[in-house]
Length: 399
Image (cartoon, rainbow, N blue to C red; front, side, top):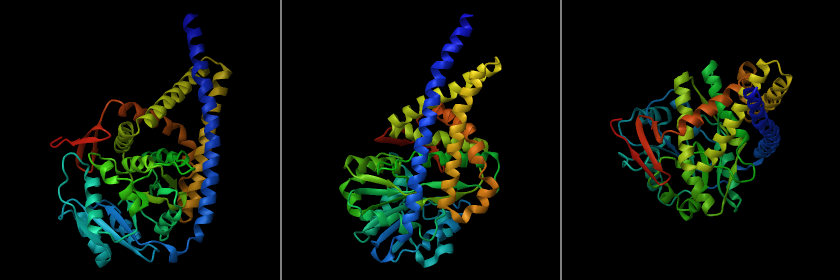
């Protein structure tokens, strides 16, 4: 009897806030949808003639699948005054051969050399590329080598920088596993949830795979200093811009596509790495997400326990927790269709995943939060780093 009473108390203690939070999240999802609709509709009017000179910097490492196609998509941007810069740590990296073969003379190659142990390789490469540019470009834009951009992507990314209140603009990615599959689709569903929590009021974080800022802002915000001793280029850039009191605008119209398959172990390791970085560089965000997912998933488990005892209230609460989140997943699929009209066929085959797999993705979030709470070590493209704090990192060689 005491145990039953305790379980009932826990049920109400967790289920009520989980239901309330889920219902409020639908409101935020609707706001994100309306924002995306407005941005995508308005983005078609940006003229090329007013765009500033831009350096598009892409760090590479290894001849990853789809690299040639991704680099070609970046080289063929509908922007009248931009230069593509590919940077890498080693002159013999096969990625540079892919870049030269696929783009030819239309790319500037920067070899940064071996990075110091107290700075991430990606940041080291980016700084070398920026130094090689001199004072020429008015805007610095950054892209990742695994992203495939539409021909107007750079134009959409750079155009809003005419707003003097903005320090940077940013996009995000959408994962399209061409062949489907449980784990690749789950990765897409898991990652797409970020698109409905990115701030719509110029207070977003700057995602490293699609960010642009004026060169003068890069210097005045002292981004170099914030990058020193770090492994996360985007979260440290975000800190620099926010500390200067400038906004960061999320641009759903400038999302890029990523493709490829993944295994279950590879996907889970990737999620833990993402949240380990978040824990070190955005602890408040991490702790809020961790607590909310503990509450949310515990509420689901207690609801199932109530259902197993034949109590209708458990089923009602479970549906109130799950269905709004699943509906929010459906809204994300709709946003995907707006941002990627050329992916209509893929969405017809796999769009169901954003509704039906959302509950599973929630438990993956819980797993990644809990695992990331017990480590500060990450591996990235052949290097292992110990994240001491947001200002210090140490490469662990021989790990």
